[in-house]
Image 1 (cartoon, rainbow, N blue to C red):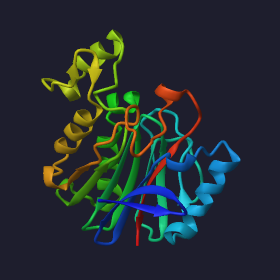
Image 2 (cartoon, one colour; image 1 turned 120 degrees about the horizontal axis):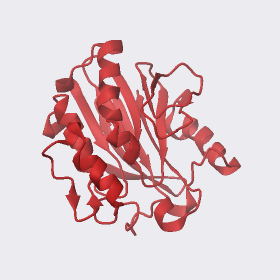
Image 3 (cartoon, helix red, strand yellow; image 1 turned 180 degrees about the horizontal axis):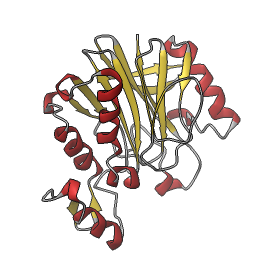
Image 4 (cartoon, rainbow, N blue to C red; image 1 turned 90 degrees about the vertical axis):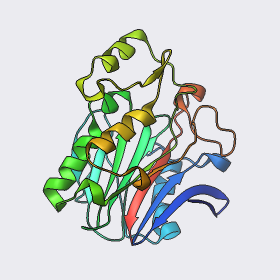
Length: 235
């Protein structure tokens, strides 16, 4: 894992065999909000910055739909593909971005997991999609968990506390410190349920809310429309 600079914009990169996993920051006002001209331009810049042919993303709806990338844009919160030189990614500003690489079958996935998607186990369902589409097995997956609103700063209401504590998927898992939810523990639990080894899980330990270096977009903190873009590509 390393920090890289491209045109004074800071990214966090994980290079693994034939894949690159990239997490953007908000340093120097880097923004990938696709609803803005600036964000759309930066998305287009990824092609030259990272030598990719196309950029794949979805209209995220905080659900659990997963799509196979086909150059179209759908309402979904995760994408999978086995195409090379295609960057598939998700937009976040506190939610959890997760990037996956099946090193045996050469397939990748990008997952957006807010509290609703986490409660619905979208990550687990994404791996099941990869199992059906590419023959993926958990033991072959390398996962990267990106910057998000971590337990230090993520206080939720009693209704959400109750939902998670009564969720069958998280039964007997301690996810809370008071009312502060650990999204990363939820994500790691889903990965373990699918047989992903601890040694293959890379956690970028950055909280979007309280990190000062690097600066990150946080909707909870700033209430603005800035977004990070986390993406994965097969070289």
